[in-house]
Length: 105
Ligand SMILES: [Zn+2]
Image (cartoon, rainbow, N blue to C red; front, side):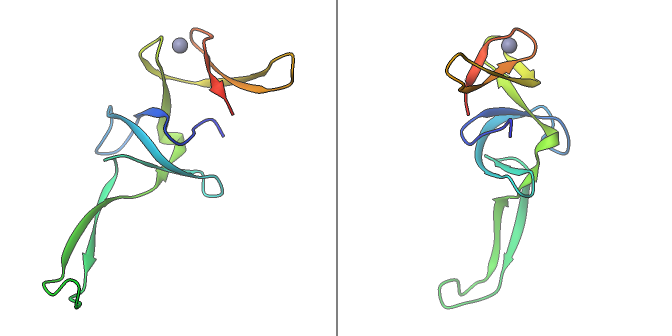
């Protein structure tokens, strides 16, 4: 997958469009990612011993990775990602715009 944990990504859709933030986790099966502070939802909590008032908790929800672009540090914008293998067969991610290496997988 082209997006990894700890990548900086740009959000393309929804309330948080245009925001840049860090990827907290990636769900490969569902092709979704949790991005810091993006796509927040309120989780409503029932009263409990720990939480006698009940209430609501604001939390990031996983979002589809097709709505995210990896930010290339050189281009300073969200870019499409390509792949290549070096001489030793290690897979690298490349910026499709400027060709710089965005790290190994
Ligand atoms: Zn670039």
